[in-house]
Image (cartoon, rainbow, N blue to C red; front, side, top):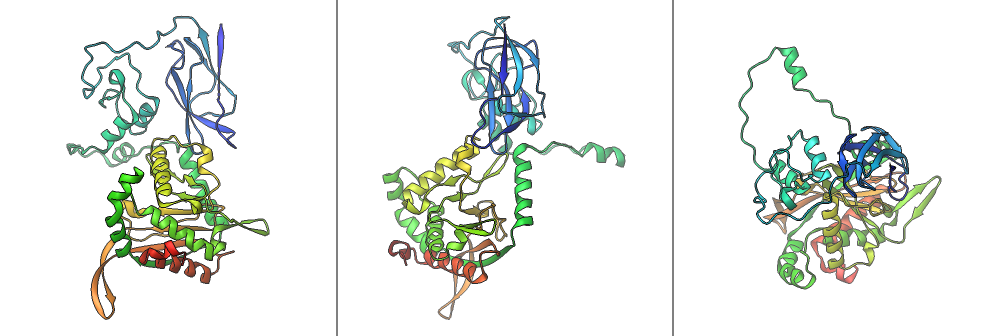
Length: 396
């Protein structure tokens, strides 16, 4: 009996995906729920499991094909040489840290296979820490981040051959295509302008150092800087509501709530998970939400719904060492705040030159609805709140 394998539901407002990788080929034995292929949408990766045990039949949608929801992907010939269900590990299993031998029966995680393929890593080159030596996505990331020995210098090749050998053409992922399209749309649509300021981080750092241990003990989450910046932005958005608005045709839609987007870097690109109703949340609630969404973003486990509905965005390039940048708007939002590296600099304070931990701030905004006065006022309010965090408690 032939069983159809179809595209599953991809998420709210997502109607199509690209077939990224097939893990099985026609004639391969498959077990129930064994991963057959991986699909890429604009923001998330979807693994398609086998609906039945049997033998892989014909593949209808090839790698690179665009498919809609419920589209036919392949057929499974049920019961013909079905793959056995996974068995418990033998008592004398090989050490987890050792690389799995070639020809092993254990399937590596599909997300790990994909990441290895994207980085041209040979099968068996990564030590698996999963059950029975299965290579997990985290194992591949650790291998990529490990220090590499210097490769021996290759002999010089004729110029034309050397150029061809040093080039590689790789198709953009759905996520990267979406990032490119949205950033260009933002530049083409909004009248984008960036205003800069700087903030003395002395008081925030002192407050954090004073209470971070008690905070973590009580709330089971670390106290970072992002909750201070989120609170400061919420405070500033109340005074300058046009930064928390968007243009809809000839209307301006003012949002009487703050759904804060927190940009997060992942191995496959930048995503912006959204913290809904951040204006109603405590420092602890914000830190918990940031930690949870950041971890799931890096693991590719965010849903489409969690990346929609943002009204304002914060991007922290400082974690990568950026001293200054001009962030690009996340449409249809009208404002994005760029945080940067904290750097000790000499500052003139009360007629004296002192060393202070300083950070440059950058607000990119849509000049169609946000005037220069509003943008400057917003940055000044953020600066004031961070340089004297007590203002946040008193709503000043």
